[in-house]
Length: 307
Length: 265
Image 1 (cartoon, helix red, strand yellow):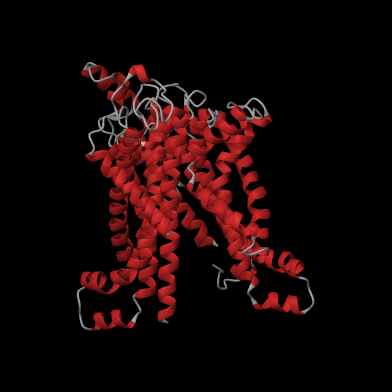
Image 2: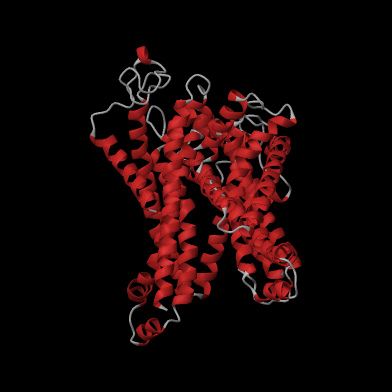
């Protein structure tokens, strides 16, 4: 337990360091970008000093880490505002899209996964495995425009982009959630089928429990464990998938903030957004581990964790 | 699986055709704007600048194949070496490398590649670098886990007892047994590299205009979704088919290699 927390701290520290040193790979210097190549060298030096870029890399890194401790993600080069404020403004839009996508995942993966396992080899199962294959292979930046073409243009049911009404959340959520729904569905099906072959389930059937009762009362709770792990792992992936989905739907979240910042070479904002997503991901994974310990007594008592 | 191999073969042929045939994917023909498919001498129609969609598709196939092969090649070799070292030497090597793997795994999906491409600047070489930096971790983790279970095998212990040098043991006694799972991982790797290259190009971080890439074609075509949906439809379909086939190939290889190991037992 304690070692898991220490591991997470080490990883967080590493993530911060890696994100900081990303700026060191920039060919040239942010000042060249800001002032153009033909600026007078005195101006460059002045700006470099003002931004603190004339100090050694390690000093800047230490300052960056200390600043983060105080919640300071630096100043945007373009907006002349704290990066933390910019991100805080955009975060709710991203979170609502990720939450809606997570809803899509649950709504698709659970019914489809249990039905596919229940009627293994049947029509539902085959449809589910086709969905799994397509969902994992179709990139979301293509799925998005195709859904727009179908539901907004041809059928006229849903708005094309923006986030004015709740209905405008549907297509982005579908776009973002489909691939995760496909993976989770496949995982749940496989996990259910594995549990279904175990002794205690045969005992439950022998006691006279019906097939369905045995499946839902005894198999599902145990089959959920690997799915919880996966969902935890993928929740962070939703945040990074949101970057592309936000661009597709002109969604005003941190993903479009990131892409705008990249276009304007606003390095502190890029670092800030990347850091926020990565740190959230690490924290979600930690929370998932703790949740699993609570769900599974075998892990809690230090026994063999199930795969 | 046979169909997947066939489709992947078609991808390679398209990429080669794009290099060998006398095509001009960047040639602008303003009199032929938005020509629909199957009309006016353009099999798949033309885009908003009158450029042939079919020719751009061939050129894009080359970009995705090149990026996929080079980045998967680089990341699998680097990852396997690092993971083997961690798994075999153990101790501090393992502790440091495992932490490093954890740190890289903390960047979900494309995030690290997007960040790297953002700092390195656009361009095909930077896409390859970004994807390799993102990709080595999977192979490293796989190789480490494989080596951990393999290093207690009797033939390895025998080689150690005979005093073989560590690099020789890794190369001759460990690597051959790791090839099958690495091959499976690499075919999934091709799928994710193709998606990632297209994704970066879609975001404007990959191949730069006027050069064609499937992702960039989708990016440019989305603006004309209402007038000329085929500009988005066709490259997306190609992209999905290639990714689907690579995923299927991975599934097929995994099942097949698994079956042989079971029958040997």
